[in-house]
Length: 154
Image (cartoon, rainbow, N blue to C red):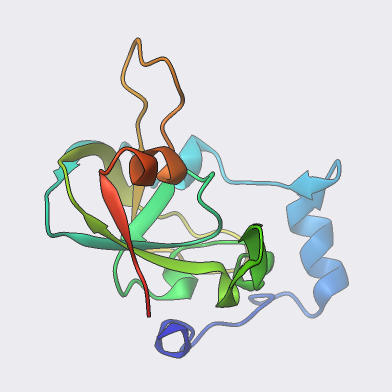
Protein backbone atom coordinates (compact mmCIF):
# COMPACT_ATOMS: atom_id res chain seq x y z
CA UNK A 1 0.00 0.00 0.00
CA UNK A 2 2.64 2.55 1.05
CA UNK A 3 4.96 1.59 -1.81
CA UNK A 4 2.59 3.06 -4.41
CA UNK A 5 2.38 6.33 -2.47
CA UNK A 6 6.17 6.72 -2.57
CA UNK A 7 6.57 6.68 -6.35
CA UNK A 8 8.63 9.74 -7.33
CA UNK A 9 9.48 10.66 -3.73
CA UNK A 10 13.00 11.96 -3.09
CA UNK A 11 13.83 11.94 0.63
CA UNK A 12 15.76 15.24 0.60
CA UNK A 13 14.05 16.82 -2.41
CA UNK A 14 16.60 18.78 -4.43
CA UNK A 15 18.97 19.25 -1.50
CA UNK A 16 22.33 17.54 -2.13
CA UNK A 17 22.41 15.73 1.23
CA UNK A 18 20.86 15.45 4.67
CA UNK A 19 23.06 18.23 6.07
CA UNK A 20 21.73 20.78 3.57
CA UNK A 21 18.19 19.49 4.08
CA UNK A 22 18.38 19.86 7.86
CA UNK A 23 19.95 23.32 7.58
CA UNK A 24 16.88 24.43 5.64
CA UNK A 25 14.07 22.63 7.48
CA UNK A 26 15.30 21.98 11.03
CA UNK A 27 15.87 24.48 13.84
CA UNK A 28 15.47 24.84 17.60
CA UNK A 29 15.25 21.05 17.90
CA UNK A 30 12.15 20.76 15.72
CA UNK A 31 10.95 20.81 12.14
CA UNK A 32 10.29 24.20 10.53
CA UNK A 33 6.77 23.80 9.16
CA UNK A 34 5.33 26.01 6.41
CA UNK A 35 3.16 29.04 7.13
CA UNK A 36 -0.63 28.93 6.88
CA UNK A 37 -0.73 25.34 8.23
CA UNK A 38 0.80 24.24 4.94
CA UNK A 39 -2.13 25.37 2.79
CA UNK A 40 -1.71 27.19 -0.52
CA UNK A 41 -3.97 30.22 -0.17
CA UNK A 42 -7.12 30.02 1.90
CA UNK A 43 -8.52 26.58 2.71
CA UNK A 44 -12.26 26.02 2.66
CA UNK A 45 -14.56 24.29 5.11
CA UNK A 46 -15.86 20.97 3.90
CA UNK A 47 -17.59 18.01 5.48
CA UNK A 48 -16.30 14.46 5.31
CA UNK A 49 -19.21 12.08 4.88
CA UNK A 50 -19.85 8.58 6.24
CA UNK A 51 -18.18 6.08 3.94
CA UNK A 52 -15.33 8.41 2.92
CA UNK A 53 -11.85 6.96 3.39
CA UNK A 54 -8.92 9.13 4.47
CA UNK A 55 -5.38 8.41 5.59
CA UNK A 56 -2.35 9.91 7.32
CA UNK A 57 1.32 9.36 7.98
CA UNK A 58 1.83 9.89 11.69
CA UNK A 59 0.29 9.02 14.99
CA UNK A 60 -3.25 9.59 16.19
CA UNK A 61 -2.39 12.77 18.11
CA UNK A 62 -2.24 14.62 14.78
CA UNK A 63 -4.88 16.82 13.20
CA UNK A 64 -4.08 16.40 9.50
CA UNK A 65 -5.50 13.82 7.11
CA UNK A 66 -5.34 13.38 3.35
CA UNK A 67 -7.56 11.96 0.69
CA UNK A 68 -6.80 8.26 0.36
CA UNK A 69 -4.14 7.60 -2.25
CA UNK A 70 -2.51 11.04 -2.13
CA UNK A 71 1.17 10.49 -3.06
CA UNK A 72 3.63 11.12 -0.23
CA UNK A 73 5.47 13.86 -2.16
CA UNK A 74 2.19 15.78 -2.55
CA UNK A 75 1.73 15.87 1.25
CA UNK A 76 4.97 17.82 1.92
CA UNK A 77 5.80 15.94 5.12
CA UNK A 78 9.21 15.63 6.79
CA UNK A 79 11.06 12.36 6.03
CA UNK A 80 10.63 10.99 9.55
CA UNK A 81 6.89 10.73 8.85
CA UNK A 82 7.78 7.44 7.14
CA UNK A 83 9.30 5.97 10.29
CA UNK A 84 7.76 2.83 11.74
CA UNK A 85 6.68 3.93 15.20
CA UNK A 86 5.08 2.57 18.34
CA UNK A 87 2.28 5.09 18.87
CA UNK A 88 0.43 2.68 21.16
CA UNK A 89 2.09 0.19 23.52
CA UNK A 90 3.21 -2.88 21.57
CA UNK A 91 1.57 -1.68 18.34
CA UNK A 92 4.09 -0.97 15.59
CA UNK A 93 2.63 0.68 12.50
CA UNK A 94 4.84 0.24 9.42
CA UNK A 95 5.81 3.62 7.98
CA UNK A 96 3.46 5.31 10.46
CA UNK A 97 0.70 4.92 7.84
CA UNK A 98 -2.95 4.74 8.89
CA UNK A 99 -6.21 4.56 6.96
CA UNK A 100 -9.62 5.49 8.37
CA UNK A 101 -13.24 5.14 7.34
CA UNK A 102 -15.48 8.09 8.18
CA UNK A 103 -18.49 6.99 10.27
CA UNK A 104 -20.05 10.36 11.18
CA UNK A 105 -19.88 13.73 9.38
CA UNK A 106 -16.70 15.68 10.23
CA UNK A 107 -16.13 19.34 9.37
CA UNK A 108 -12.55 19.96 8.24
CA UNK A 109 -10.50 22.62 6.52
CA UNK A 110 -9.61 21.42 3.03
CA UNK A 111 -7.08 22.84 0.63
CA UNK A 112 -4.05 22.30 -1.53
CA UNK A 113 -0.82 21.38 0.24
CA UNK A 114 2.03 23.84 -0.25
CA UNK A 115 5.39 22.60 -1.43
CA UNK A 116 7.74 22.12 1.56
CA UNK A 117 10.39 19.77 2.91
CA UNK A 118 11.79 19.57 -0.62
CA UNK A 119 8.52 18.16 -1.97
CA UNK A 120 6.23 19.70 -4.59
CA UNK A 121 3.01 19.54 -2.57
CA UNK A 122 -0.17 19.79 -4.61
CA UNK A 123 -2.20 17.16 -2.77
CA UNK A 124 -5.37 17.88 -0.82
CA UNK A 125 -4.86 18.09 2.92
CA UNK A 126 -7.61 18.04 5.52
CA UNK A 127 -7.24 19.69 8.92
CA UNK A 128 -9.45 18.54 11.76
CA UNK A 129 -11.18 21.43 13.50
CA UNK A 130 -12.07 21.57 17.17
CA UNK A 131 -15.56 23.06 17.52
CA UNK A 132 -15.79 26.27 19.53
CA UNK A 133 -16.53 25.43 23.15
CA UNK A 134 -15.48 21.78 22.86
CA UNK A 135 -14.01 20.56 26.16
CA UNK A 136 -11.19 18.66 24.40
CA UNK A 137 -8.96 19.23 21.38
CA UNK A 138 -10.14 17.16 18.43
CA UNK A 139 -7.51 15.04 16.73
CA UNK A 140 -7.47 11.62 15.07
CA UNK A 141 -7.41 9.81 18.43
CA UNK A 142 -10.44 11.78 19.65
CA UNK A 143 -12.33 11.08 16.42
CA UNK A 144 -11.62 7.34 16.72
CA UNK A 145 -12.53 7.24 20.42
CA UNK A 146 -15.82 9.02 19.70
CA UNK A 147 -16.73 6.87 16.67
CA UNK A 148 -16.27 9.51 13.96
CA UNK A 149 -13.46 7.45 12.40
CA UNK A 150 -12.78 3.71 12.31
CA UNK A 151 -9.24 2.49 11.63
CA UNK A 152 -8.94 0.25 8.58
CA UNK A 153 -6.73 -2.70 9.42
CA UNK A 154 -4.75 -4.57 6.77
